[in-house]
Amino acid sequence: MKNHPPTPTPASLIEARYGKTHPFGAALPEFNKTLETLLAHRSVRSFMETPLPSGTLECLIAAAQSAPSSCNLQMWSVVAVEDSARKARLADYAGQQRHIKQAPALLIFLTDMAMLHETATAEKVSIDGIDYLDTFLMAAIDATLAAQNVATAAESMGFGTVYAGAIRNQPEDVVHELNLPLHVFPIFGLCIGYPDPERPAQIKPRLPQRAVLHHEQYSNHDTRQAIADYDVTMAAFYRAYREAGATWSKQSLARLRDPESLAGRDRLREAVLKQSILLK
Amino acid sequence: MKNHPPTPTPASLIEARYGKTHPFGAALPEFNKTLETLLAHRSVRSFMETPLPSGTLECLIAAAQSAPSSCNLQMWSVVAVEDSARKARLADYAGQQRHIKQAPALLIFLTDMAMLHETATAEKVSIDGIDYLDTFLMAAIDATLAAQNVATAAESMGFGTVYAGAIRNQPEDVVHELNLPLHVFPIFGLCIGYPDPERPAQIKPRLPQRAVLHHEQYSNHDTRQAIADYDVTMAAFYRAYREAGATWSKQSLARLRDPESLAGRDRLREAVLKQSILLK
Image (cartoon, rainbow over all chains, first blue to last red; front, side):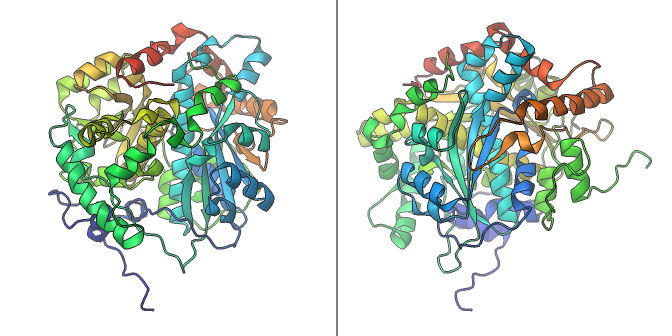
């Protein structure tokens, strides 16, 4: 019982999210369960073996399809992977992340222009507009809106989730593993399962709200100070949970230092083009 | 009273989403308010004038920042526009969409690499890894995860929302209007306000689930039939709410016919590069 966390309140969730008390001046509006689910998010990387109960996946995908879609083009689809051997191979392609293998369900979200290409062929019309960067961006946005609905729905049902962008480290291997046709590209994974209660995840503090919320026009007059404040917050967070000496600035700049620090993703453009997704 | 819609049930929401009874065989899991909010989504394009109550925007952005972020890089920010004249100009740049002008709050979501560029300059390090397509995609995914949390949070509080991808029709004008610095790009807008009860929005049916959900590997053996079924569903939807003779296939293929049908977005790549966001 002593490890049982206290019931969160709106104020406690928002304070955890910013790593400080009263992070902004505004009074909070009335709370509801959905707000609580969203604000209580933390990425879960330790899962129980229990598979998703029957009907869960279909319900999650109905939530995904309820997300908005640009011009209703619905240029996304998803592969649900539950087979252990396949999850293990995909984990290998994605930086050997243990939780990808461990989660009972791994959803690989895809930008999917194959459905429209197939339709165009059947209707004998050309769709040259599909070959532009904007169309790939639309598809990626659609897939992401859908995925975030899955994550929110899953967390409201008591599951834990974590995204796996590392699916883009070796995209050709993922394309082969999932038998993806031309015009389809894997943009990220989403791991879903019951969280291991022995290894509870923490809410990660984010940048001060004043760094990301602008009014009427963009203003960066306070950005440096906001980031300096955040580095202090995150240094304390890393000390408690991970490593001493780290700050957000140092970690983020290291992640983007050079092409080698991208863990293979400097090749993304090449891999997208191989799928006949042009980026004009 | 006679126009008051019946209280939705899980089954009725899912049936509306697919435009048919019992759209898939699985039994539904236990419902909750968050699932109901997600499944009940419909894009609202008619708003009341009532502004967002004090504290609402801050709460919505706290929900946005609670969304996952790739490597915690947080490469997004947002401009909240409430000034009528500015909203009117932005609506002009975005295909003269009336609801952009009418909604009391318009959030323009930005991919934001300026914060990390500024940090790198201050720390005197180079971040050549930021110049790759994957980094722009990461930023776009982060911004979209954040935006969808705002949409879900807002809908849970009784607001209506609609995305405005048309913000990308004339991106340079939006960049100028919002005074965006280099390394920052507007990827879409999100309109928020109380829905006009006189003009209720409808749940739009989506593709059959079997077209978008694959198990273990991608399979397109049934896609053509699923799209044919959906064309029938959508023809009925369009007849009831918009125009006769339209199908999803026809409308979607027309939207992607050629560069001209992209309403300016064939220039996206050029506009992104102008912001010194490279796409190597």
